[in-house]
Image (cartoon, rainbow, N blue to C red):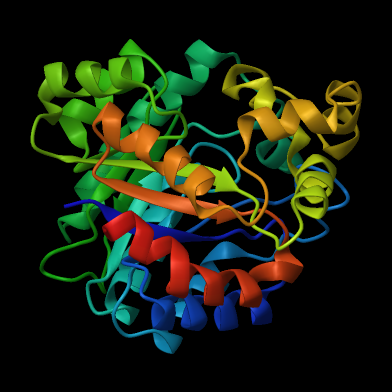
Length: 320
């Protein structure tokens, strides 16, 4: 049976609202909640970027049932992998075992802020590989020493970690990351309903593990208003991850998406009040073999009304 999730998108809401939305999404009946971990929004019009880990600690205390997850944290520059391991272990304890650590190789948008430049994709994958191994070792609760090409860890130990530490999900985009996820992760993560990625993950050791996807939708009683909002805040989405990972800031995303039309956005993101269109977008992930799918409601100001609609229409339609 598919699990349906809700996205706490830090780029479009402040921390207090995110905690309230997390509570409302749990009441609405979502199975899990994922949170983005960004230093910057994609576009100025989104307008937010609170610290994900501080907010997750509050969400862990404000909810009692839903699984929580980062979607996704980058452990290669802005955070050292040892720090990510400590943060994840702590949220795992605060949530009493309801936390899954979602990891990815990151975007220039968020990682360049520490002034180390932005490595090539091959170097990032090397760094990511080392980071995942470090986190896995630290989750065992023993002293860890690591001397790699990109990271060093000197006699590090997590003093507060559950006997069953948080499971790890890895974002994949091709054969290299699918292999790493199949070998080291408890779940794969992807943002496109790509059956080939699922097959690659399965072939590299992922068979029987969770496949977690995310799909943007823009519900609104007015279809025109939904299209306008999706174009204003999510027109960057269609550029693809290979482009999105390289752009350094909101001005770059605005420039790269300046010729995207509202109709173009409406073709890739279901917009408006019709539940069938939103359900169809989720079903594409199910057809590709995903076990867990989180929706992103575009527009931070519309979450309360969206969650009421989701409880009354979207979730019953998906589960029916």
